[in-house]
Length: 640
Image (cartoon, rainbow, N blue to C red; front, side):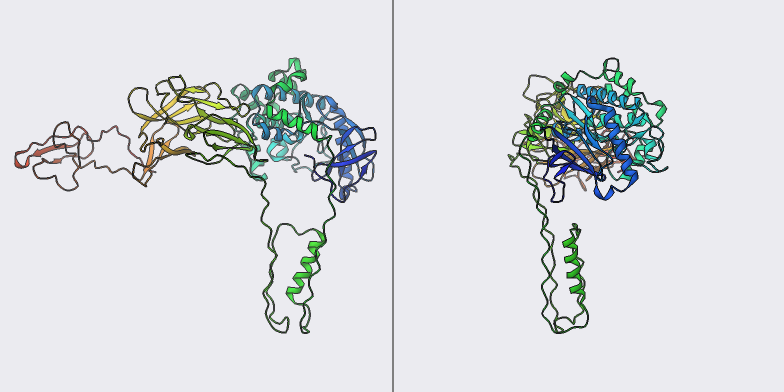
């Protein structure tokens, strides 16, 4: 993104006039610049404080050589460079396109054809690099620019020649933990197969919005890269076998870049037709490319002024005191830190006064409080009738707005899509994709789970259809989606029975069902919510009419067996259930039945089917065992 120059940024680098900042990192800064002839370029410079480091100068020279090797077909063409200058610099063509992570953030995970085209083109670019015996070693979404003609590989800051150990100490890991190869994470040799591993991670990110080993602390990521299994749950089924091979721990078992290109659809290892790449990209990504193309020709932002020096501390009028008080020492030290611009977001450390300043009178210490954070954006949304939670979808958000489901760009707060899903209980997300039940007013006879497109807001083809359930039931509910399994509560097509259902979105088949209670209050679905926690599905039932209590229950997500329920339903397995007259409702006495009703007792072993009831009538009445006694097959809790 284009940002203003700082007050101490250079005005020119080589023959180029510096216009704005594009980014920066630990090694250097990248500027937007223009030549005297009007050509727009990206200029990368090494930080001045690092220019004397011979190792970093060598690395910068290798980056320049690698950029020349990959060329303009799969990278950014080198326009000019001077690695030997007092401050080394490299000028390349300015590529019109966002980084892959920004593209996925703007338009959501890429469709499978776009992922295949992206992978085939990147594999061809890496093959060209490897033929010159150079490995990238830091292939990640932010180092891949998405253009209308195809992806471009950039930033060869830690690239090196095969077998060259001079720039990396043995046992050290250099790179980005989330996209490192296992051998690189262990500080071992990262050869061409390591770039293939990283490319597979990039493709998983492009298809799902998440890396194959998740996120977290660098140490945790490095451990999962070396010893864990990749999470490919959101990757299209046809791509999984290939990516499993690429993400193998043993480099010898990974395919070559040529094999990878062919498997992804590149004809004979040739690059994908660049003229058609733009047709595969979501509209939101194309808009971002267009915006950047327009932005580069606008008037650059003004250079930022130097920071205002901190005000001098006020002199303390007081009687003579021996030495400098701790409070005054704190003021002086704080002023020096602020003037040097090195006091970050931390707070003041308040030192207690000695009690002898200002003639012995104690004064209240002043506290420099941190300013509250600046609001990034605000968006007015129509209030939904039911539910208003904000859901994470990749790097963006989704939430209800009236009778529609909206996608929101987390960076800007702008609405990116609106799906016509009226009831809030009929949609769910598993973190990267959004799913919804087919509308109950449609002609289809059975409910179906569909994916909501984050580009055109339409519901896709049904991933699973439940033919034995009523599609026109308004209160059919999509609870959640986890690990490719959708969990629903739905009413059967015949009768009024409700079931908790697990359905496999990959195979389109029902896995199991478990009978549950239906809606308990008018206008509400059967459950308030449901979620997967470890190996269990936890269901929060809707409150009964005129009740303030809800009921939690847990089920084994693999087989649907009920594990526990809280609070437990009142059960009386050792108490008879009375039926006063045939055909009427039953009731269970707490102590003894009313006068004129039969009483009963039993003997023998306890448990369903083991009871031997004998009845005697009071006032000549007749005792009958009730037919509504709890069945031995009824669901019972088995402990939490």
